[in-house]
Length: 138
Image (cartoon, rainbow, N blue to C red):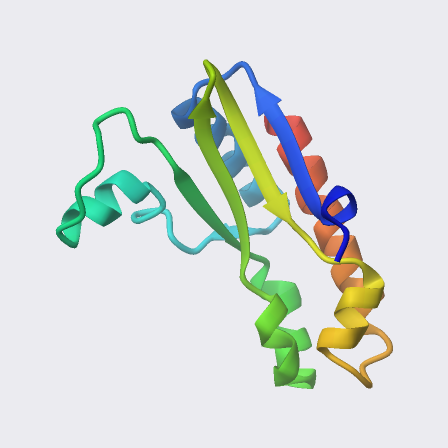
């Protein structure tokens, strides 16, 4: 895995809440759903389970899914599921909203799910779309 290829790292001048709202709207317009809309705030999630975090902790883990693509993909090969959860991480650092998104190269995908020739290209399209949605939202 190559960090420079696989980790998408950008900043936004928007605050975390605004970026997440804008990103969620863009995702919905592209037929993605946010599976964890009610629990993406890790501050609230940690506190609900007894964790202690400062008030300024604002990490949001946004879980994306495109059901109209994932249904066919996972029905065809359930081995693909290990690469299906897609998370966009959004948090504040140094006065800026930071966005991180981890994807995988075609070679990584082929190694993780061997013998599935069409999957690397298909998943790469999804990764590219998520990166473009991040750029649109920032």
